[in-house]
Length: 353
Image 1: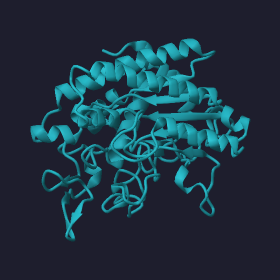
Image 2 (image 1 turned 180 degrees about the vertical axis):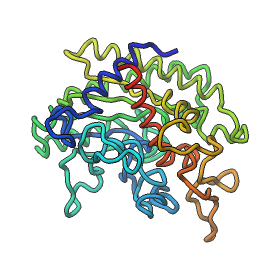
Image 3 (image 1 turned 45 degrees about the vertical axis):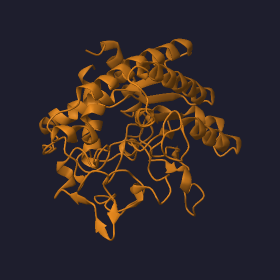
């Protein structure tokens, strides 16, 4: 069982960040006006190039109705840090600020940097992975360059928060490169050590609060559950996530002990995923997920993924209603799935108030 202190840290974070307490109901929470995002496909809103599957049909099917670079049928987790609105219709902001512009589109005409910037690239990790895109260190380099250009003032950075989603792709790359089970523990420690250094670097650049997403239950991803006909999660996959999260929690605890105030907070994605998969039907205004471990967009055979086309033929099949599925493809939640995760995290906060 997770330690209560861990959840209390989430509560404290949410009391400050999730629920605005300024004079205006829709204004930024306690002066937090900028969001900077670092990570992978769980938070990437359009940074990968057009060859990535996030830019291919049927991605973006639910919203905006066409591919827009998100690895989902609609919104991804970082979008739930966006504009405040009705929970039953649109994402509710944790901060009362808009979703930040992807780094790739910062120079586009009418591009707004008002709400911060998203440096996340799908497929990336703490270390180099299997895709040619900026890892976490390089993403922070990109962020630092924007600060050197005085794109954001010191006051902007002091009133900002960073969201970090990293690690899943590091494990995929480790195993793909013939990494051994025996060497997994050492790899986890080395990777999280580097992650810790990166988090300290973000703090050193002046960011006021840093939210780190821990690892989701890897054994429950469709890429794993397909071996069990989408009926059960992989115990070994989930065990890997738990070990990773334990090491991460210790590292973040040490970082907070070294900081003047508790700058870092862990968002418990492991518990939120499991809660959403099993409890979503009991949340007001939501529907029950059907065949929870089966994705909406499923490859027709081994070797293909959602979005793949061969000889003009789609090598995937779609469910009738993406909103009835927690997962969109082999590793990514649907928009409805991400909303359920958001609601789960919010419920954790309320349960400890």
